Image: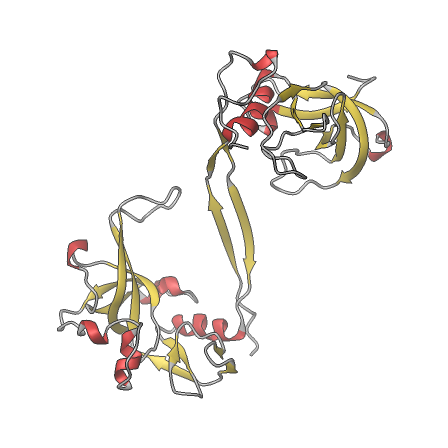
Amino acid sequence: MSEASEGEVRLPESLSGVEPVQSVRTPIRLEYDYRPSTSAESYLRAYGEKRIIGHRSPVDGAVFIPPRGVDPRHGVAISEEVDLPDTGHVGNFCVTHLPIPGRKGLEVPYVSAWIHLDGAAVGFLGLVRGCPSEEVRIGMQVRAVWKPDGELGTTAENILHWEPTGEPDVPFERAGNRSFHAGRGEETDA
Amino acid sequence: MGEAPLRADLILEYPFTRTTGPVIGAFLTGLREGVLTGVRRPDGTVMVPPAEYDPVTSEPLTEIVEVGQAGEVVSWTWVDPPRPQSPWDEPHGLALILLDGADTPMLHAVLVDSPDELVTGMRVLAVWSREREGHIADLSGFSPEEVA
């Protein structure tokens, strides 16, 4: 039996000859009342003081950001908070040329990147600005650009974006997800 | 801690437009034209709304058939208050309506003022929107047949 195609579908007389509907609007909208977990709450409150905190694994010292209260690799709880600097490097990035419908204040092209903070084992997402998008590269060192002190809230939006520091790049072999393993002298497929 | 727990509004929204394919497209075309349609299954019964594949045999279904504009309420519930994003602003009934000529009931609203006006087995008639574009909202709902 072949797939049904437009030519095979038989219509009642009342619909023969009228222009067929071929698409339909199906917008979705979900409204959440977001309540952070204990570790997310600490993380957000720290942002209000221009601090970035992570969680250190008791197994091997890997530092996770955002803190989730758990090392997902080993299934163990984490309670040790560590302060991370607001400097790091671009582990990976994407240049976006198409605007997000309904999203204001984000002009294309923009660069979203995995920011690997110095001392963190994993990256987290941020915008990179302050240089042409063609110049963004894996290993580029960046620092956070914060909102003015009077506008800080308990939100990750306190970091407006990340800008190049101008320091020499982190070598590709030690950039992104490789950095944690490289720091331990380990081989990795990351 | 003493401080109130943090909370925030988080809205996730996408303005999807889907292509319909010829079968669902025919149903929506019918709504735009003020016609209700179903699809005939190999056993001769009619599913409303139409599906592209037979739910039992998985065969492609291709024969779109017109069904009646009136039918029978086979099950219902009362919605009060409507949710913020409901197509209906007022309290209303939602019912499974077995249209004349159909063998499966279809879910839609019954536009009455009170659940006292709803009874299983009652006859209802389609109420069309004035402006129609090929969308389920082209059908405002159903009204009790004797009132309509």
